Image (tube, rainbow, N blue to C red; front, top):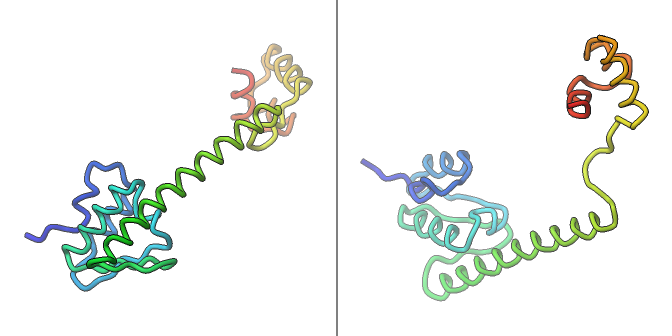
Length: 152
């Protein structure tokens, strides 16, 4: 029985697509990824997947770089994987810092709410009179889900 190259991904929390894509690969195939950091979440993951592919005779093609399987190429590949993980971690850190700075300035992300205090007061008053949520939502021009989210 042939062992599929996706065996490393079992119980690793990868998306089902990654696992199924690797399970379909055969000797002589090539796995193409846009950037090295798209192959896995950590240096260990990328290295294990690359080794798994290599042991099954499957080529790895990184569209924004080169991959060499032997000798110095393996060293440079390992180094590039490490830098890709560092770059990813730095992007996450900068994004988190930016979101925290925006929050400290009183800005929040996401779509602006359509429910103002006045609309909420009207909705509660109409609900108190026994009007249905559907009728209130239609009259105020909002969805039922929005009303439920704000009224509780």
